[in-house]
Length: 166
Image 1: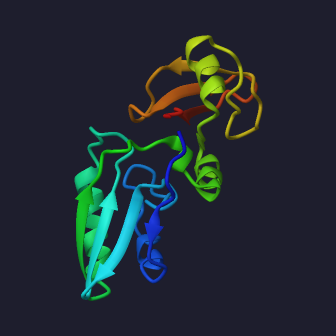
Image 2 (image 1 turned 90 degrees about the vertical axis):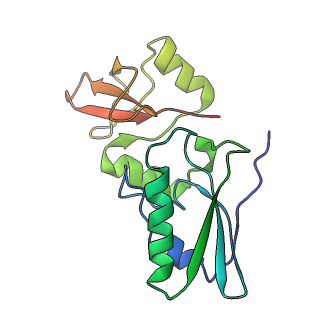
């Protein structure tokens, strides 16, 4: 299934780029692909926000942070929660994946590699410190439900792996 590209008015993009994800603060909500639409009508901004999963506890905080960012620019923002289509890790930008890796979280692999790593114990998730794939899963869940905890068997570094969601 092909996902439709977000529709974001260019003059609103810099403001949205200033809003960090509360759980991974090096990423913005745009890096994660959470904004599906952003437009201005008669001086007010309308945002369609898709959380990374429907039960995400940070959704309300993100909505508040978006409204605050626009208030700083003397603009009123309305945030609408959109659950269809559901968010997918395919919406994470390439820049976001690099930021994630640099922060110490392995970005999502392909759907097939993800299954090999999480269900069959294949050594395909690269360590965020040394790059080795001589890694193993310690726990299906890491610091949040969307991540699994891994450990590198070469440098002994523990790290989160962001699970693939398609």
